[in-house]
Length: 325
Image 1 (cartoon, rainbow, N blue to C red):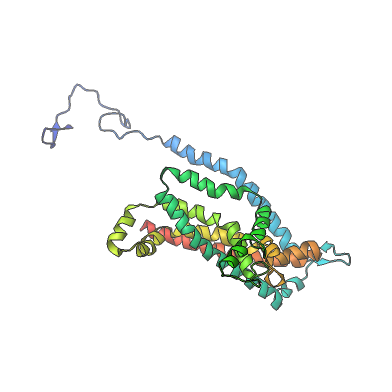
Image 2 (image 1 turned 135 degrees about the horizontal axis):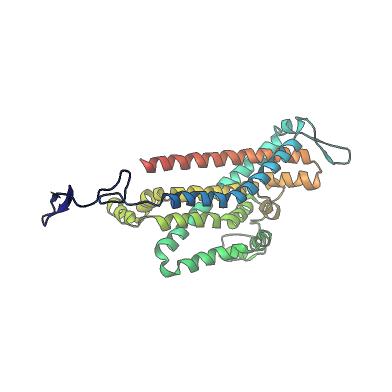
């Protein structure tokens, strides 16, 4: 029996032609057979991408694991009278990390990195919002205007920023001209100068993920939020921010990780009281000739960064699970 549809759309069974050849058992090409699917092509594509990703993954993983093992074993070593590192089994470098001077520097670095994330978030949200939702045909041009200047060398940009923030720089001269600063006001050699350098150096890493999240966001949510919450500020806080929190989380990770280990900003725009853990590591490796202690400080920094990354991954997995419900 076969089926057909009449004019009213009702399925009507029609007798099968007895003269028509019957399909042999297992033949799925006859009438009513499901359409063929290209399973072989679909299974080959994931394998192809896996093989393409394998060389780069092995390259990066191999060097990462090798460097971590080298630093970890060196952290248990010692130095000879000439300052050369020697591998061994000495836990004195690890116990030295409990020194209050090191914990103070670590907490200062953590505070600077967190403040940098918050300030970068406050700067990046309106910039990304304006480009993604109001940029129109100039979106790519605006993104290029933000990203291209950061192609310059990081050290060169920090030197230029230190000139802008210097005591005779254009910023302080403008503030003195309008009465907001006096001759004793300083930005360099202070924590404000270090944070300003960190924000300038890494704010672009916050803008790009937020822009990508807002570009994917459904704009009808904002229109519905205006009907529910009224004002633009409440709509932004209760609609835009929750809808783009994954982009904000990714931006915070991209800013926090390099800011935590940065040493250029503290060296150029800070003083002895503003050094960060990156400055300590640099000093132990290049000036103090104490590679084992520098390796121990590096492992401490890696542990803090690993905890931050682990928190981000857990939050991302939780958001994905909630979205799948």
